[in-house]
Length: 607
Ligand code: G6P
Image 1 (cartoon, rainbow, N blue to C red):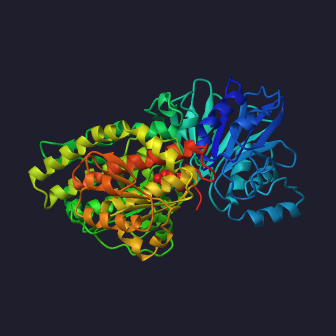
Image 2: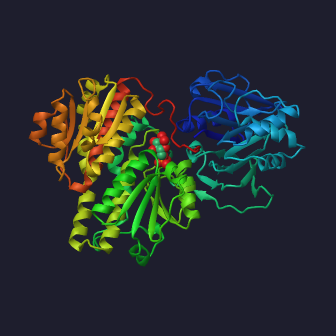
């Protein structure tokens, strides 16, 4: 949420900042701005809208070599040019970009105003610039530290001063910040996608750390000036992974990547000889795992739906009692941590504030918390007691797709591991592995039918409301399908258990509200068919996602999307693909901004 970039080096800062902001735009995209030091002065350019709007209004003279940039997801103050970052002090000698929320900004602002400071924007962030101004006496790092010691809340910031044309000061508390070390140049960014085209050598800052950098050097300290030795890490993925590679949108690319990303989540982790899975990152011994009596999964958004699939799996296959909770709810209900309960937090970004704070609350109460994350080195990944990376590669589209299927894949692996320590036989374990390994090819088959799904999107995209219905392990898939549709096409959609239909939602059924039914050939099939018929007999239109050659469904549904037959518990991985494609093509058809839907952000680092 909110993208930050800073640069010091021989290149044109403007170019580096704009390129970085474009790569960060998925984090927030209601307004953007940059500030460059030029001839001892600050040149600021800020604009409501996308980075391209900012680019169209950049001043001609922006030829400095040190600067900061920001792409905003508004929290305090409406979306306009003035509230866009960077924010400057009264003298326009100091500028700052900020990601996070300053909780005591109103008090600080009143105090600063009474001391003679005048504010230009309605943002909380501007207080930082004025506080730094107040404390600045020639040492920017010192002034930033004094300012930050007064701030309550979360921040990732980068600050510069017109008098110091080769200096940036960055700090983090709750919002990520990474230092990029180049050859005679340095970068600061809220995530590595912004700088990967320049360097792969990075240093992740921790909460409470401050970095001062010039084009050649950097120094990391804490707020009390203690030097901190940091490890330089190497980013393993390539620039191509954050480019569209011929697809129209990142979302389309990421949907089509899933056969490969699922294989990456499994790679090196399946052991056919032993008929089990190896998940070394869990940091748990066999004995620890045998002592697990319950599992609790905590997540938000799409990751929550993946967690729900995980719950069905763990209960039905591994026979371990499992619950799933919305992270923001769990945090504030004083959760009870029972002995021998294993906790999982699931988060693509590893930065979602709701999930991060829920995790810390659980850890405070003595829970062992494991992470299922995508972003390597993210806050959640670092603070958990162990976990599993899903290795999806960067997911850029705001609406999550490949991370969802990989998160689920990790739950299959964990289910296999636990099951094999308990009731699952060797043969059943091998069969489970074979079934899982067959999934990528089955997803290829679904993807090869994308044209037909695009046709359905054209037929249905003008409807205002949709119901998505599934049962059992496919109920969370229905919820995910509804979420995808509303996120990117803005069509109102609800996901329900098909059995719940009669307890309320059926009142919505009529010609104007189509339903999408998930009908695998599982134990609940006949029950779902009954629900489907109830909709048909009330004049509702039905799209069914059903198994190839299912003639009964073909007879009663208006439209059918066929998926290959798989073993019962594996249906979520094939059933979700047509739903992702349907949402994608509806959004394209309606001319929506697919990768950056309105009001959303990829990584939500505020509560
Ligand atoms: C945001 C994104 C969603 C995502 C959710 C959880 O709301 O827009 O796509 O599912 O955060 O994100 P996480 O990174 O924790 O999986």
